[in-house]
Length: 266
Image (cartoon, rainbow, N blue to C red; front, side):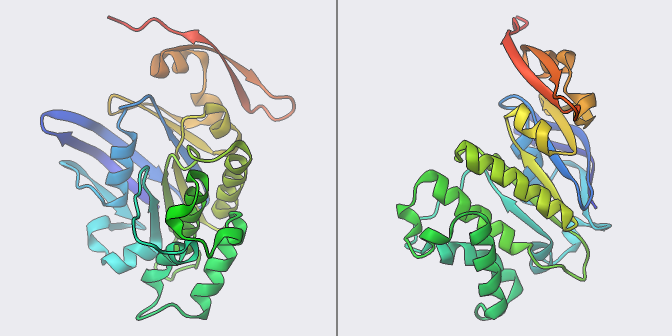
């Protein structure tokens, strides 16, 4: 399990993450949601080890995050940041192969090539595998980067379950590829991988995740099942919107219809 207790993080005198508790179990998909500036990306960086908290602690599979060697940790958790620039003239296949670096010494072998081929096919990226990454469209680059992080945690590890942390991966994708990605994340969860995704589309999250955590001003305001978290009251409290929460026939999955923005407090 990936867990955090009472995490706090400051930028100067500004508290960006405020006493956050978190857990991500293998086999589940959790959405981290909230308005702009809520602290979502900062929290994800704390959970991944890219940032060190001022207070609190993060543990991975029962061991403090700082207690793992970097190579070990890279085999157990992969991170897709919101923004990632790459200026080198690598092909799309070579970029995806970067995800296999923790798994080999000196150069990729047959297993690494097999994994990258498999995940690129899964993410509809095979047809531009040999093209320069810098000449791809935004959506194509996004699928290559997804292939990279999928490849990084594709293999089971003796050290325990694996985790995938994604910061707004659907933003550059068209609707079809957004839906395909969410289905693939469910497949990964079925392979005993814990998935954390930052996403803004409430309806997309509601249809595909197990739990939702709503963050605002660095604090967790609500966390739980989709049905318990996505209510008219919580949406107004967290996002300043008037919305109707409907249920789809037969499934009970909330369907959210937005009416207007709520008046913000002065």
